[in-house]
Length: 423
Image (cartoon, rainbow, N blue to C red; front, side, top):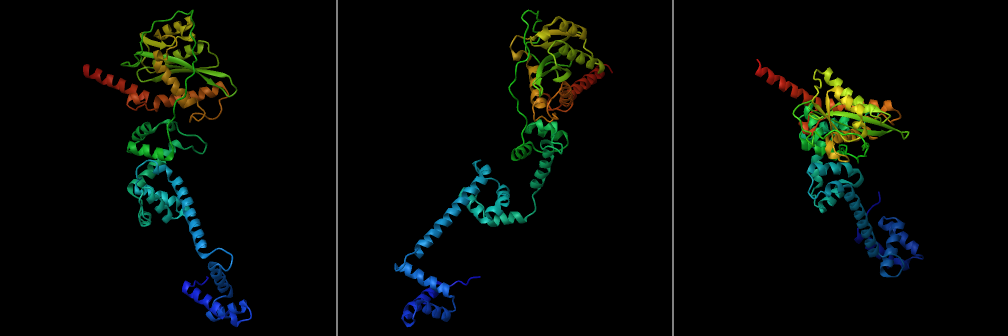
């Protein structure tokens, strides 16, 4: 390691060379003799002499003061560049306008200390409203994790199980949920976590629920067809199952450019999908199959349609055909049709179609196994989504329970009332 000499020693060494230079044949000889006498290297003493001459104006070069100023400017530039990089890294919590919690600041320091060092980060953060001392960070680093930190770790692992892909690259259907529904889902699973905790951890990890896309019109009215009256008048809240069924269909584009069409029949009471079918053709046969599916399901469950259940749809030609009207009558349904070009007259069906396109069909859906090449691909995807939708998907309007569970509560409540009235 190089030996350091104070300024007084350097001045004395240079003075000895200056005072005794005439005693030697050459300048080099004098410097060598003085260096040997003082126990310093020849090169060090030579540099001291040269620098003294530069400072005195007797030799060209950079003066000591100028060199010191240059070093100071370089240091300030390095600090400024470092400050900018630290602020860039800290933008996420600095832009909130409030001082983050100390553990959050310490976690940031721990993440970036290998790159910047603890003291520089503390200096920059303190200058920008996040006062923290290095000793605070080291104290935080040495203490065991808090109960909140451990709980956050547990909840984060649970949430990652829903929002992060598995080994096959697939995510669970609950990855479609936003923070509120995910919180309700965790509560139903027996995980007693606060909603604000779920919101905070989802935000911190960039997890969010799915959002809807623009709807494309699929049904086209037949002006020549006779239409049933509107028996619903946008009143989709009904007191029991089998009072009102709403229907609609949508398209699904295959990878080759062709279209498959999916029709739904939905019971308005709980929003349960009671009938559905997929078809490569838009002829009325496939919407009739969805109605027959719904009627048979209710028979199998012991709650058949009794002839007074309203079937409400838009004015699409599939729903105004003679054969479709006959299917309704044979299935125990009464026809009702909304106005032409008015989505609000069939809002419940439109909503379900929107969920289907958003949650099941889009490319990043957890129900997708890859490109949709054939009708059977769409049928498999639709069957899985409908089952999840009916049995597991939480509905805000139902008190965050699934449709089938809501129906079962209705039937159980009615049975209890009936037993109480007729013991």
